[in-house]
Length: 126
View 1 (tube, helix red, strand yellow):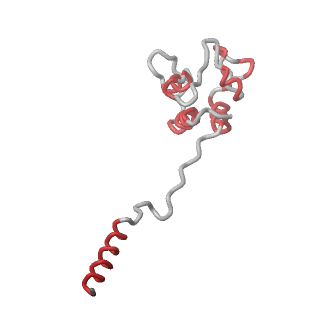
View 2: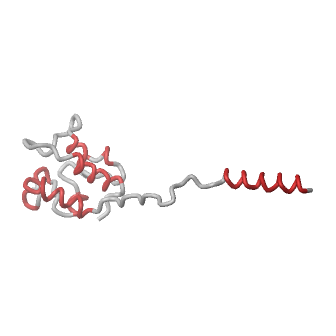
View 3: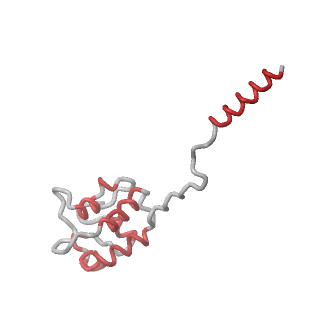
């Protein structure tokens, strides 16, 4: 009886060790998706000289959420959830067949482009 009890306790102890969580004690929280205000700040610094209000070249006005979502003369520039299929990102990345933006200036930083991509990927919410 004593051998059976010892064996049972040992088996339970091993089983408990095998079921321990491998997740870290304090998991790192997932960063929040960028908000439009983050994207708007990038547009204000880099784009509104040519794509703001009355100066909306190509009909692309980046001065407000509503204007961005409206798109330009050739249609929408943001495809919610799909940054690679959004003309806005294609222009910022200089994808073949799409005019590089901004023209005659250095490209936006990778951090700025990633912020815009992550905003679109998260649903391009206001």
